[in-house]
Image (tube, rainbow, N blue to C red; front, side):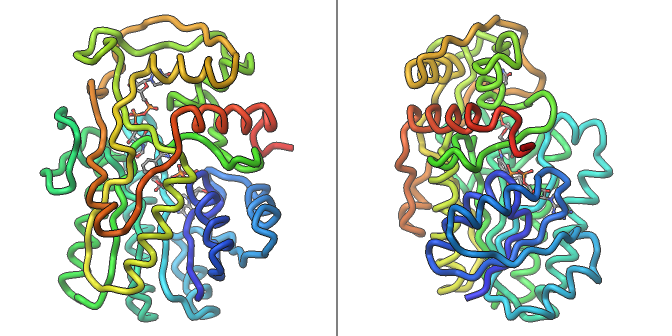
Length: 337
Ligand code: NAD
Ligand code: WQD
């Protein structure tokens, strides 16, 4: 069965492709390397012991993407490709709307034309906006606080509308919480450009001596230790959620949203302490003012993914810390070899 994976060279895509190959799927990756490197494709194949078909194509390039649809009989699409930096999306919203929304529209148009009607889409817990009462369930009203989040909310709406127009489409909207960790081999992982925006890559860069200390954005939230609480999920568990969602869209039509999280709220200080315990490395930190747009608490109710997809996160916070650290130490410069 041939599965098209957009953004398959990226952080979550690469882990998912390795699992797809192990499960026996034939994988076709489309990526423009705007936030990834060809080296990741090489390592995906090395880990899986199998090859993938790869096209360096931008989703905005209809003609180039159509060649991919012409060349393969596709069963389904897993759609990761998108820009994802929240702060950057505030500075350059047009680029974010164009890349994420137009890219998705081009993809959907070709899916319709070539009768490929099954999709697993990378949405985000960001669509719950400033909703500050966790656990979060899929039926809550959606809202957003930045252009990146708005692209996810709008794409969910677009996919809903496509399904209304043609109910034979089958779509899973996966709302990821906070993915961290890396493949246990230390060969693939998250490779941020420049100063990391997210907590775990920042911690690993402090641990390896690239950054002096971690800034903890506020310790006066209404949480058990005053620091922000999130639902960190191992990227391998997250990747497995895509295989479960793929089975679902292949076997039954419909459109549904699923939270992919552990259901456990963990504070910034909990992450720091767990990282220190798992790795033996001390993380110097300072408390700084809150980051604009952050909320106190955000964690999933993941029970729908369990009942509808048979999926549950299995890995511990210690696993996440250990695997993030292995990736960082084995690849101090990411995929730049
Ligand atoms: P990533 O940046 O590592 O991967 C995205 C990939 O898409 C990259 O390889 C990039 O080069 C590619 N891409 C972007 N625009 C493209 C285009 N127009 N044409 C072709 N390729 C393009 O990000 P990730 O962390 O793996 O995230 C994957 C998806 O999951 C994204 O849609 C992201 O918004 C979503 N998501 C991520 C997180 C997170 O914290 N990492 C959380 C929730 C949702
Ligand atoms: C986690 C916690 C920070 C960095 C973001 C996106 C979200 C989704 C996942 C894509 C918060 C604190 C962080 C630092 C810190 N991505 N922190 N010092 O903000 O929960 O979610 O990534 O869809 O849309 O918004 O993740 O890792 O940035 O922050 O104290 O240097 O760590 O305040 O409490 P966030 P994060």
